[in-house]
Length: 489
Image 1: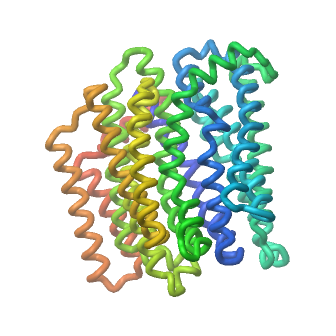
Image 2: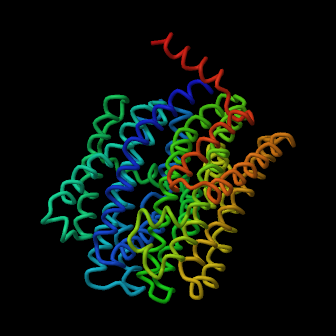
Image 3: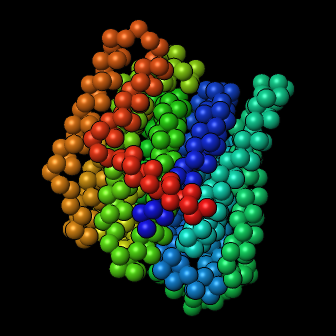
């Protein structure tokens, strides 16, 4: 199972690394720099609102579906029509409730129009995730990997043309950006439907079976509650910053600028989680030992996240000034500190991608929801205290502390349920690795006359070498794995 996982994750990482950074840095970032200051911040706040209300849109069906199908693939043709019908009904409720809430908190005119567009994006993206959950649950990870970048490829083509043509580039509108995403997600969803029909016996039809739909929603309810609570403590920050801060639109712009880099870093962790949910589900159903796979993922993600975090914090000012024109204004220090706090939460995100996914696959929804409820209360309380006074910096600090506490709680829960234990030597090595790399980064940043990009590259190389020297990654095992792959081909 470890070999199967590594082979597939390498493929998925490779294709995502080629596409998603282009979308995030060359399209999404460029759009933010093109539109008037504060306009992208409004878009980001609306996006956060749409994600928070995803509980209505998805109702935990995607997570529940992935767990059920990975353990019982033969059930796909039976339950797919009812799940599909349930999702369409929930989508209608999603639009009504989210729009009403947006109006209630003060959005009017063009903001409401943008909100409807963002809700369309979220509805189509959620439908695409649901279709892909069936494909990945059938262990078709490479097919799912290709689908995971198809929407971004289409967006890159559409927005890239608009940004390259002088007439449209100079007058780029955030509404064009939203429309491009709607079209790309819609086309990708159609492609995913066709692929699903070819790899399974599922049929696309409406099947309004009240009993089955009620059972699906009832079974998905714990997942829905979990998704809602996670959406609140992960995404409420942007909306609260825009609503509660002095000069909220600018503060939301700063938050969006910094959060984009964390989003890029999280691509790897999210890919791990996408693969791990059906893999864990299948292994647990077969009563296989999941601990070797957990250790493999932790040994890869934790030191990697430390490398990214150290580079991000040490060179935070340089990173933000390279990417955003706003970081050269009087708000430069806010850009720097918001990014430093957010990227500081990256190791916690990576650990949550592993351990919360394991708890989800095992059906420990009560434990997950209790931990998530703590996260919601802690996050909202601290945000209400800090954001009015410190703006986006207060929100970033709250996010870092929240994610760190929750990752510890998820790990503790897994250690009790699955007897996952960390040896003292392993913990010491992880701590020494982080300390040593931080020392190297600070020394290089202060003592060498090179450009900061070269310095960051040196720190990254030192971190990669450190992962081998500290025993987190074994070159011999990777060579053996690749040799076996060639023999199989």
